[in-house]
Length: 242
Image (cartoon, rainbow, N blue to C red; front, side, top):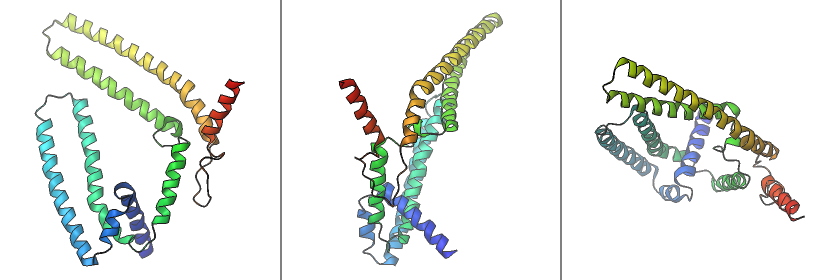
């Protein structure tokens, strides 16, 4: 149980260093202090930042509530603000887990991580690229984009109706026109997604599947043949030159 806790704390500490202290300035300076003084610093940082976050949150909510925003826009802004709050909470709470890595040599590990990041960048293996995502994640993204625009159009249409004084017949005509617009949007959206998948994502995924995964135990040269993308580009340039 103790080993499991130490392993978990070590991983959290490394994540914190990778996110907020890649040059190890904070960890090297904190390591010089006595453990009791370090815990005093942790407590002071946690309490201070927690108070600041709550004050900023209250100010942000009071400010945004003064604007008459559409529900979808309001929800999006709140979701983005929540993400920033989670990152801030991880910063103030994760600093305690540095205690698990003070006695470890993390320089070698961070060098391997930097090497892996360079390998990922050179071969365009970033997680946010469509070609590197599973089909169900791409479907979820497409559905999310569709839901965003559908709610945006629907909210705008309802807001427009709320400002109008019209008869039942005209209201029915407006709904028929909106229904026709939504159907056209759905057809165009499906066509766009299909063309994007067929001409952009699928060819890129075929190249991505040929790229070997990064191995920490091997000395991978990112400028060698493992950089499949560069090799393919060179071949294309040679063929064009011929």
